[in-house]
Length: 227
Image (cartoon, rainbow, N blue to C red; front, side, top):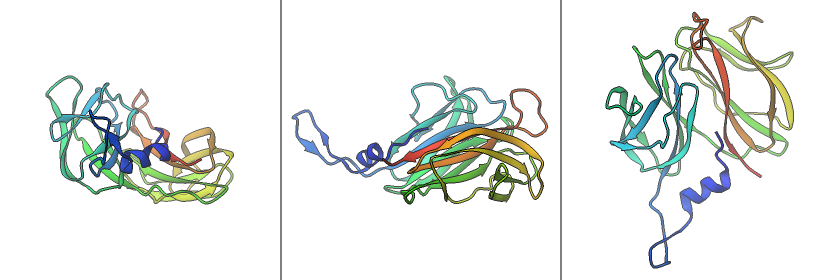
């Protein structure tokens, strides 16, 4: 997921042209990214107040980059792609000029919606920022750490998450998700290169009890980068 801050700033505050080639001020908006983290789910569609948001089905483990969204209370709906079958819906509240990530999580028979506010601020010089989200419904609490290095997140159960924290940038890491308080590695992300000025989310998904395509996995999302 790439949320280039120059483009996002434009989406939030720049002017647009009308049919007479005159500049008009766009309506205030929030920005929302959409992620399918439901293991075993079919590809999904996402709607806000019955308005289809995605142009292509959102497969498990995939996402829709930030979109403009009208602020206020909105009805957020995940459905089976191309079908009226609703998987999960909920009312969410979006604020002007704020960034959000909305996840469909848990197994299809017990779906959850998780909405997080993305506090996207420019990292300090020489730094990136990183957050961790645990979206595995059956895993015991976990830590996120750097191989042979510091712990980034501690003891996060299902739906647990951290704030965006600074980390040295322009460096390649192996990130490990471990059983909380132990050195037992459940999932690792090797050769992760974190760029200066970038904002990232590491998210754990899948099932601890599975050995098929729904087994535990982790991905890293680029929420934004400044340059």
